[in-house]
Image (cartoon, rainbow over all chains, first blue to last red; front, side, top):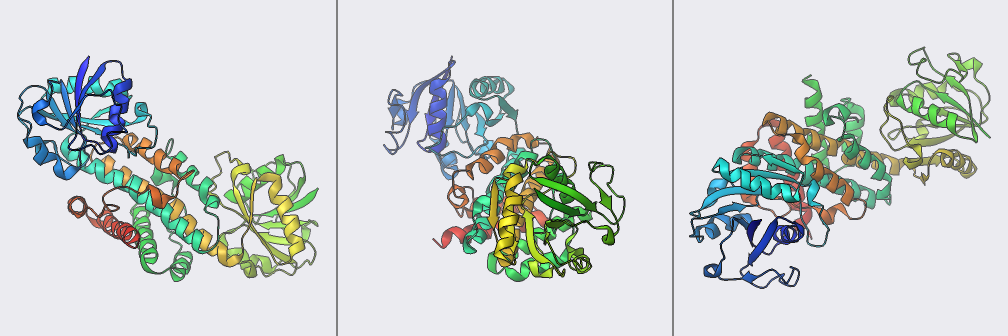
Length: 252
Length: 252
């Protein structure tokens, strides 16, 4: 049985708490949070405190608070036993300023409070100072997920950037497409099959191989026609992304 | 029974021919192509010709050739009966220079030759000069697809631009994410769940509402940290798309 204490009351803390409460080999023995915000969302049977001197002894302490506060908060953790980890994609392990062993327990997914998460499919990226702690952290992660990876701090920064492209930036392309549809009284539903086809292709195919469209063909006639119809941010995005696509395929 | 003649031997012609051969109420009576390229891929029972004076009489003539040749090719079609349509997202109906009635029969999907297409889920965007022809074209489209829309030429240009964002540009984001992973010895599989989550959200949610990440939060600390790690096209893309995301959410 792995004894866990969770710090925080945001989306990640909430979803982790739910997953831990359902896991057989994990005992979520305490939850620390600064104030009562979101207390009603969490399972009321989890003991909670807002005083660090009331912290119990655990095997793993998970800091699931906002990135900016991780360093300062961890400095207040003066105990020496156990493993202290944070859950952030963009904070290096060394920003933990606690006295105990350090590590990272980063679930690569966006979380919201109102959605059921299937943790078994969420990749967990782990890092520890000491290899013996990695064994413990892997056991913890494997209890809730089938996709557990060792990723060091410098890889994690790159992974976070890659995730921004794959998730936030692709979503902005969908949002821009929807704006164009909305402004021209076209149902965004028309683009549904195309979008799912693109995402589905990724299961089997390299996105470099599946690219199509005017920029892939360097079809300047269509590109210029499209640019002529656009303005502002949409025009800048169209021009730059087309240029980058053209560059990608001309190099070959 | 709708009698159809198909012009072309590319991906769209090939996939349409396959769908028509399986459809009950459509008779694909002839295929016209300039040369024998891809002849072995098409069902050999479809009568074919390379001479326009050998064309049979059909209800609908479908020009599925490359955009640039549609105008010139259609000029050679001197018959007056029947409906002549092209399948392009970026060519206006008026670029058809034939003497018969004109229309557009645009399937909004990317096609390849080696993939089985489920036409029932592909949106068809239709336009005709005369409303009576729309009835015929809708009947034809409904025979192979469950998603049939009337879209005029100016809407179709916008729709094509939206599709470039939703499909080509999002795919380029996935490709860039994969490049970053590959260059840092990180498995692209780690991003799979995140990507499917993003695409899946679109079934129920507005992409504007589901955006997350540093640019959405206008988190300049992370944005600058990421930009510092990037160079070339990737850096330009990161900067511009982040700026556009920030602009989208600051307006509110």
